[in-house]
Image (cartoon, rainbow, N blue to C red):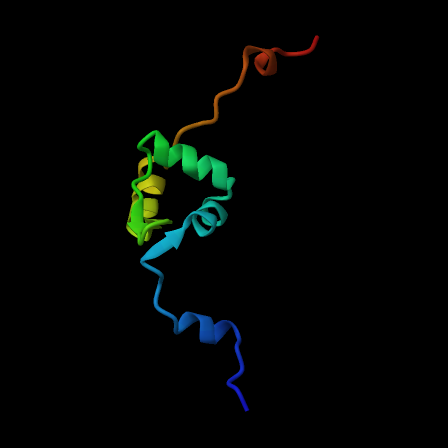
Length: 86
């Protein structure tokens, strides 16, 4: 009988070092085209695996998220939202 796969089994797996464009897009909740644009603009570094496969290092994704994380910044509002109805 094959072993049962459950949430605790997933925790035993080591974290992936390289993610595909699709996995990266899913992780960042953007489209694959957005990931390709980010690579083209130099915002994410790619790793070429073989002749055709392109991957992104998990450390690269973590660094991108850390660089683009803002703490303690109030969201900007437009002047219209500051007006008081009379």
